[in-house]
Length: 275
Image 1 (tube, rainbow, N blue to C red):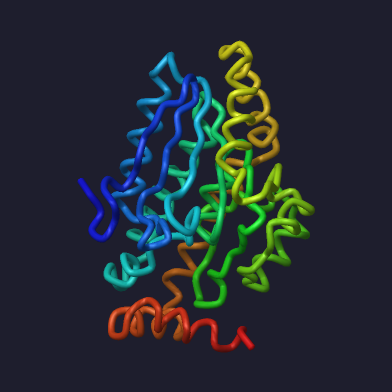
Image 2: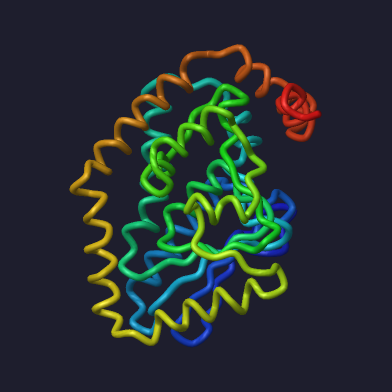
């Protein structure tokens, strides 16, 4: 199925030797994560896991951004939900992100433009990230009364840095700063992003696939024995409390989205923070 307003299927799949590139293809929505796109990504990941010809995956975005986060139009249309429904939805969303982390093969995020909120979750769930020098990162959720869906951030950059990013809701973290705090692995010129990401993927693909896959499992186990699973479950429970708190600013954001459109809602949200 094609996503209305896009240039074709919600996800594009391309093989370059032993590297499979998955491209988020909702450019008109800055690759906002909706149900169709996440379903397509889940299927593609499952197919790649079973394909012996694929050694490494690259996840990237079409158009002007990697991903601006979850689709807030879809969120507004869903309306108010009770705690049970929210818990199911949030847990399902986190499980979708964990499909990247738990994928048997290395997954590289190739990031340009916006990488925000749920888009940042998606990037952090990948094993490595190559960013262009024009990329910007951040979690703006707190600014409209929402919580972080999948709490990968402190596991990657540390709790102290994660607190600053999440408490402020900063969404303009430049690529150089993202590299400094360990949010990404490499920053390259925008015009060389495809080339540099593919070169890293091909370097990994030259190694014995079984050893690479077992090494990924061993590295993931470091987080697991440190309580990663329990922390993710706790975040789902706490985010459910946030989402069902019926906060006035969240209700107002949804109302403006439904009545005036997402652009107007974002302008209202950012009015207190932009000079």
